[in-house]
Length: 97
Image (tube, rainbow, N blue to C red):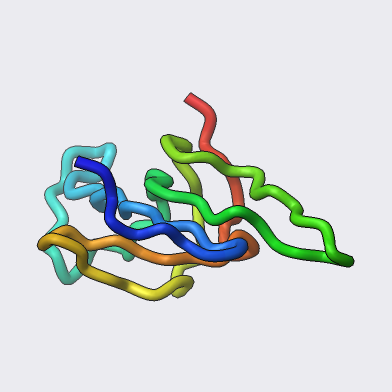
């Protein structure tokens, strides 16, 4: 099913990936001790930022895995699923597979 939201301008809708529940050493972390996740998968992308009358397309595309700032974005819920709307400048990097 396609997402029913189309972000505007340089905004990007992402689905936040779950935080690690077990450390590399095998220690299980309770919810209160887990760090806020900073990785997400891009679900929808706006057309881009307008500068000097020209539209500059975003560097990310749907399906990319990205890193974003810890306290960035606005949380939304669509059809019972949680998403985050970020500005392109809040995305720090694309994670290569």
